Length: 372
Image (cartoon, rainbow, N blue to C red; front, side):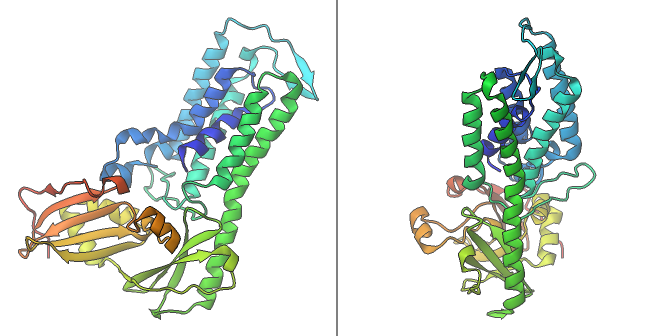
């Protein structure tokens, strides 16, 4: 998910606990827990970072358990060394208010940190990008196609509740309301992805049950979230040789999708293997991509240019949005230049849309020969 969603969810997490000390460092503690796994962005935006590092080490169950303990110990040390310790024990609307900040137990702080970090992993796993929660035991990416990485229906309620809680942060009279609304927010963050997943599963079952041909016979149809999910989805139909895509509206549940050209060619498995043997980044991309496609052209120098794309990141927008954005080419492409002598002369990674035109080819010296 996007950083704003993680920040809001993290900030609300400690506010859902009535015995948490109402002090501004508490909010920053929650924010830290909510966004800490994304520290892997420091690895950069290279191909290796995108395909193997992001949502890897720092997003594993093992890592967040360790991080929660370290955060809890740090915050407990901070509370124990505060000079202001004059809060009295009070009961407001039946809720016990902590007597002194340093009375908040290490166990309670650990649970708050673990919840904030765990909520981050949960939301990331509900997107189709994939999260390596089992690292280092497995690099399998958990990718539940319920959410797009930006979802206003999820984020806006969190921000509204966070604004309410922070506005009344020091009000003991409204403590009960703060705690209640913060709990509602966490419940919404947990429930909303499941609602989207239910819509996804219903549409997927219908399309796979009713739609049996897409130009040629389709083996299956897979729905993936897009910017306007859960109202719109991208349906990907595939057979043994190609993919086709279609923009699908949830409100047209009874309508069968019409998969129009173009068709996207699948990558031959042997080509994957040959490229991965001389350039490991192609092996990483093979593990990363869900719907890998291949385009082949001949450049002015007579070299064959192979372009690999993942249909998850080909926009497949309706016509009015294509006109607004002026592109439908997507993100995260990998390219290779091959000569007639079966050598790989160069490669490049095309990441974000803004960098695609400016990314230079990386020449290989000496140019490796593709294995037979």
